[in-house]
Length: 158
Length: 158
Image (tube, each protein chain N blue to C red):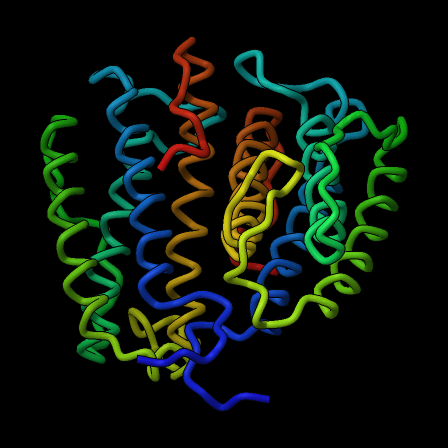
């Protein structure tokens, strides 16, 4: 345990990410079943497709980082045909992220890793990218919900 | 200077934020002049209004944090009637954020401050909130651009 001043602790960054993931889960829940799979604006991907992207990053990426295992990015996993199936995958990913996070030493965050054989950056920048990318796509989901006349969850509630 | 392992350095977190701000600047530029002030989806705020929110947070918030000066949040600043005026405000805020960032000691990031007299959290969580909130609203701007038939800048280019 270190008492040296830090911008953020490892534990707090995980809480921050999982807080965001909990909000994204509530955005998935807020979609009507049909619209989750069919609705979008401006020819963009549906929220189910965006969720599949997030599922293809979070847990598989953390596993790849911890095991230093360079596997290509794969968005073609079948996440099911219902919101309930997506939510179950989401919850499984939550556990996996917690698990792999606990295996990543603090000393490794500034080490470089070639994630998915494509993104050769310090691990912290790959992780911040996962979080940012999720906020970005979830923000798009907020517009879909508003366009459907549905009030999204409060952004600041995690 | 510390060589202790960190999740992220203070310098890198500023670069991360300013990288996001640089992308948001390009999203503002991508809007046609008229649509920046008038277009939205689902009854939401225009991108000019969302940008005013971001301008009311970034630099004023950093100034408040560094000076431990509790001033209420004020979104009613006149940012002008043209994109060029907004972009000039944006660039001024960039400099101010860099300035106040340099005055915030690493030891202060986990100290609590009552931002805008409303958000009493560790400073790091207030700062992460600024970044997240910007990504969230910018993601909404991406949908507006797509709905206008305009290709947004690449998310990963900073």
